[in-house]
Amino acid sequence: MLNLYRTYYGFLMKYKWRFVAFFVFLLLYAVAESIQPYFYKLLIDAIPGRDFSLILQILVVFFGVRIVRLLLNVLTYWTGDNVLLASARDARLAVFKKIQDLDFAFHLQKSTGSMISSIKRGECWSNFA
Image (cartoon, rainbow, N blue to C red; front, side, top):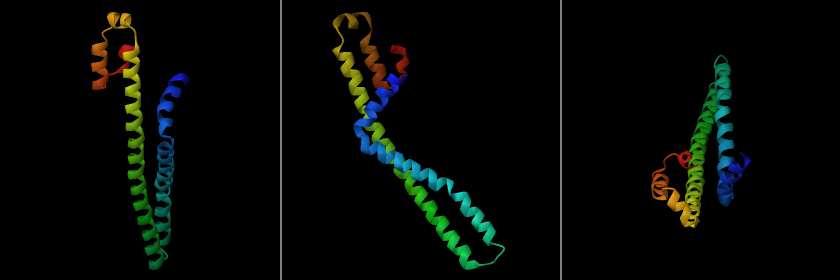
């Protein structure tokens, strides 16, 4: 199982800084998402005091956090897709290179043409394990 993770993260670590940026944006997004109920509490506690300037400040900060959360959400998906697409391309190239480097006897015993077609279509890889 560790070998599988090592192979998977090996493709991801070719794009280390993109992956780190994705991870940082993901953590910041989680913090921005989890802080929102605190603003609901502050707003509910401020309403009986009828301090409208405090209520307005809470709402402005709350909407600012929501906008930051939205931006972090977009950045998280963008950097995640950026890393995933590049590493998936490298993984596919490695698989095709491995198939092409196999000897002639393997190609006679297996139907590598249908294997390559299945890989191009993105079908389940477990059929060929």
